[in-house]
Image (cartoon, rainbow over all chains, first blue to last red; front, side):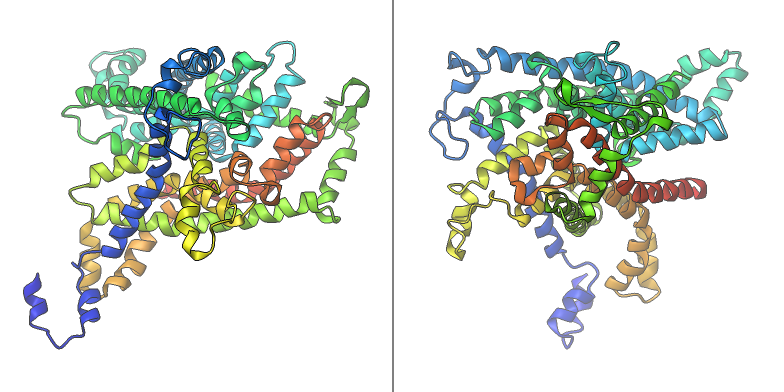
Length: 300
Length: 282
């Protein structure tokens, strides 16, 4: 490619640079690298300072496992309240995944099958819940559970799960639906031509085809609920339904120690395990299936 | 279909209850508990009108966060778009060998809690922290960046929401076929002409989606300001969260939620209409 350029030595240098469609996009490259550094810096800081020997979160005072295991009261291992918060976070995430993903999958199949007004209304509501500011939903549900449903669903784990499910349901629906559109109805029709009942066709043909999308939804919903703060905080009742996000929030506003860093790092590891496991599993089942997880995500 | 029932239950019912609470009254004999009026013919608009009037009749405590919210959301979304487009464009077009790695790095901040990342920023932006040390030579050594500076908050919002801009942009830019760009150039377009007249129009749906996904949640954000700002930079979300926790404030917070819903309704409906139109075209 440089041959053509050398022939035109009279062209000013900057023209040569910008005129050449294959020039290296240094500016864009620098921007991207700079952005990545900027976005990852806090993550690195958070992880590294969980091993800080002192209380500070900005000046390094030596390596220690103090905030992980050794400190008798304020370490992750010994702090009852922090453990409770982490447990609650996991509990909420797992229950929400177990409810939201199957419900969302069925819902997506439903929307795909129906036509007309109810389907359109449902997908409208779905998208609405996807973009509505979380505080609107959080405060609305808080008010719902403290007034009208006060005696049926009090604030606490149940309310938190319901709220998270409502907020997260749109992910599986959107992802699974995108996958359904790309699969098309042919496979199912073929199965039914071969004598399968509609239910058998869904179970034996459609669900395996949907597996990648379902897995992607599991990973996404899990990662997002672990991280959730607004909904969970609005619907928690007492200290034992507080999640890690709330702990970080209150620590950040009072006297933080690197213990919260340790807790957040722990959650990071769990999320990585879930996502990594999902990815491996996904590779296994999607072998020879074309498309890919990236394209499922891309549909978002 | 149980899904629809669930959605109706979780969206429509709460909305109705919020309306009932917002148009209800406050029982000061019971520590300011909200008294909802479920029947529309009993609705009292006292609190709601009072809240609404605070926005136009002088009360700086309410009006300033409102204007500020628009300002910050606008600035932060614009930065998200420009920066996010550059990153997405680079990743989709030029990052040949490292594409997978860059994509993972782009998503990875989302795997650690957002609050944790903002918390890390709090440390970085501390007066004794590294950012002040870096900016020291430019005369910012003693500036407390956490003492309610708009720029801190805008960058904090950008930081938190930009991945949701980059991902749809990347997905759309990655799908543009090379041959279209080559055609643009074969027809005599320069590099920048091809960009403005081929690439950009093709990524328009993704820009719209990204803007909505980024801007709407920002309208309700309050924790970013709680951690990186002061009341000098408080936003609409802060009004709601403060009122919700205040004694007797639930009725007012319901009124504020209604007002915010109306504010975000317009961009939301626009987005929904556009998505439907695209779905019909596809």
